[in-house]
Length: 269
Ligand SMILES: Nc1ncnc2c1ncn2[C@@H]1O[C@H](COP(=O)(O)OP(=O)(O)O)[C@@H](O)[C@H]1O
Ligand SMILES: [Mg+2]
Image (cartoon, rainbow, N blue to C red; front, side, top):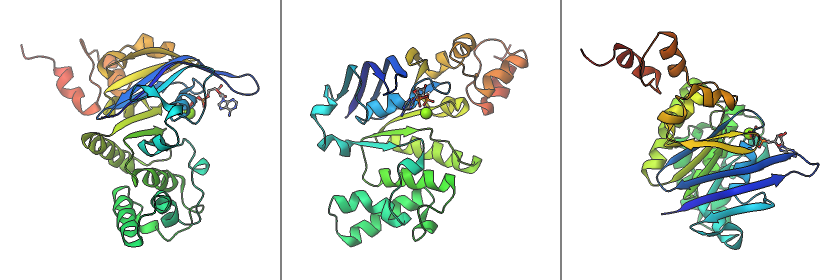
């Protein structure tokens, strides 16, 4: 069991942008937690703080109850970070070298590396790209390679910024299934996104951010159906909530479109 907690962090970038002004986050093994907020609300900064890659001037980052920075660099293996921009992450000439990088650092033997890389490449659908240049593949392919390069060493906590960026609809579905599978294996997952429909489908808990602050935290049924709260954070409600209200639905809106018909019919009379 692992637990990563960010407590009341404040961070100002060089140049004076106050990106975090009291933000928090907690993720445990076996749950998917989402940070939702408008563009510039501090989501990516919060994830970088959680990963120990940016240091807040106030507040704490705890891994299993102890300060993360006192556990580095060994704790790095427990955390897997997928950056918002794959070009900030990928640095090896070929896809195979990129995905195998962490395993080579760990000193695994060649046949084990081949096997593990192939397995994770199949899982994220990049096995046909292994010999290709990392730099001349599409945005969506880069995102999947970046994810594979992290999954390959089985971190306990996955921190994934904008998981659905550049992904086509088919890969959104695959990603949803993959994240749920990882959760089932006991991994803790943190994502940050403004993709509220995706959030509604995958999250066990949602943090809502605005202007560097955590505005609200709760289960998705509560946070994502509170239209006023979402709008105050410049976030649209999920499509299912919007359609439910447009069609005059009463009571609790559903979080998934496929649950709309049953919810609109209401309880049997
Ligand atoms: N490297 C940086 N240097 C200076 N300001 C930054 C940097 N990265 C982000 N910011 C600023 O910090 C704020 C929060 O950014 P970010 O965490 O990227 O938000 P989000 O991920 O929610 O879009 C924004 O005002 C952004 O312009
Ligand atoms: Mg961001």
